[in-house]
Image (cartoon, rainbow, N blue to C red; front, top):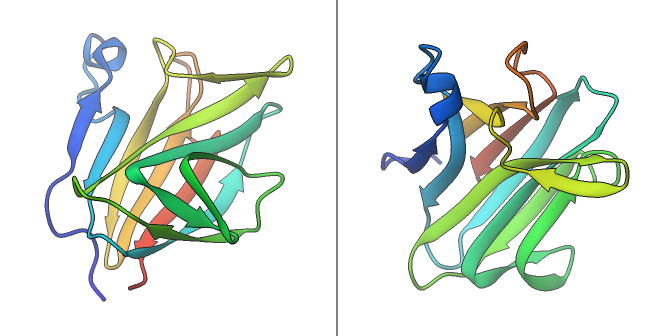
Length: 147
């Protein structure tokens, strides 16, 4: 099985672009097939804040025998590997990183973003929750095609 063949539709971080970094992705939108199976693997976390990933398709995701239109997968409460069965008519999976601060789910702040690395079977995402002083290691996860 090969990785994601078509280039993603991405929303880039204007905050980092203003500082000369044009490689920081704010929102990823991957082209997928209906009934496609993906595996999300949490690799590491380096933050005192709870970290996770938000995912959505137009017809829903089957995760752990539950169907949902969108899902918040938290690194501390999800299995290390999460199988995601995607349902779609428009052919897209949307995703971005999330975190929890003072009991509130947060995302999409000015300096939020992900560095994306192409892999043979998918992509690795290195995430920043907020702030310009970052190694993009708050959360690192992989998303790979399984079938």
